[in-house]
Figure 1 (cartoon, one colour):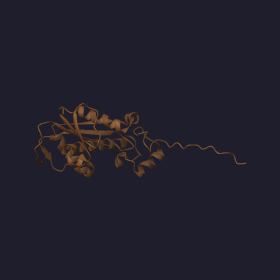
Figure 2 (cartoon, one colour):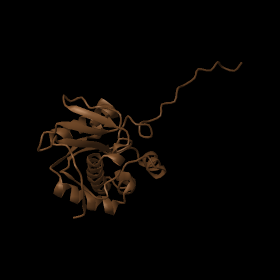
Figure 3 (tube, one colour):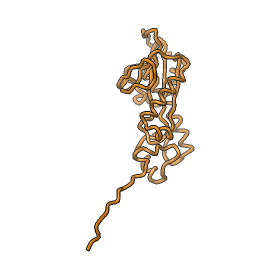
Figure 4 (cartoon, one colour):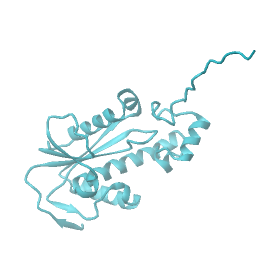
Length: 204
């Protein structure tokens, strides 16, 4: 195993990140990871790593992490709560699922989550903080596998290719077939467009 030594504090710090927030279909998935006192080589923002490399890193993260967990908010929760609150809910589930209680959270982005625990937000933290990078990779790999399985259950949308993001082909498939059970009905591109009717005076 290729590792780089690091001098972390004695406190247990969990990195938190999500995957799928901007998608039109599927859940938003959050990862939470507490790393040991060494850093896995190659950690970075999951979107900048090839799928093959992500899968290898995900296995290594699970093998060496002091604790890791996944939290999910499903499309019906996203539609009911809104995407921000559903993302918070997924992150809270991930934190509560850790087998060790963290003393501090490092969260990717600029929004703290509603938990009574010390936390810090870091914009682009998945590029700079190894524990956030690890959380990003676990969330991304988990969600990608989930969307590939949904492609078999809901064929024709191309979920295994675009993973639910609003690509041109995905939008065309929604128009052609209508939304599936895992589409987010409140999202633009999925919800029907209601055109306002204008009242016109009759032509004399």
